[in-house]
Image (cartoon, rainbow, N blue to C red; front, side, top):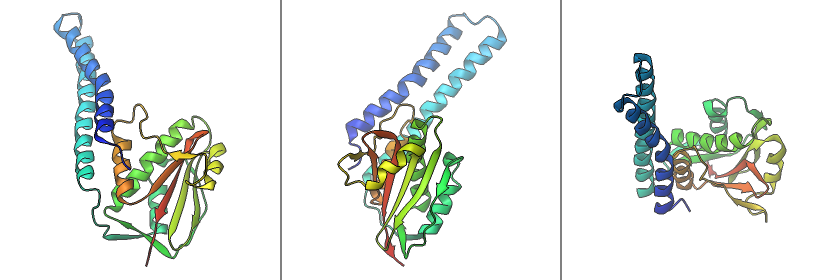
Length: 219
């Protein structure tokens, strides 16, 4: 299941609070005459402008989340080979610097309503796991594929192996979407992955990794 309305609104409120406070703070300094030089005034207004830009982005993201939540069962009309999916992820800017492992030739393909959105959603969630990995080596592993499923694992070198037991493992748990500083990106990604029937999971002891299991169709 994807996030509910209360979780979406709570995340939006939390993410909007900081840029709102920043923009109000700099504008107050300006209006109170506490910025004495033109350079100080210009810098403060630029900071306020950047903060308001973050709020604008959050509003746009809320629109994308709303559109997806209202149409969770959009038809999956595109057929994407496993090779094309992996190749697109390898060139995703968010995953730059990752070490890729595994090359698979699968007889199946991914069904998608929007291949571009699916790649962006996987990259966003993998990036969140990489952020938890700190300075550890970041790995993206192409795991087992057969005619019906494809499994990808992403995260720190030392924690990816723990995911190989799969989402049914006793220590597997749903990937945590509510991570600070991500705006609504992960919530949007959750709706996209749900729409494409992709399962994601963490290992209880390894937040710095995430597994993806994609359903495949025959080509």
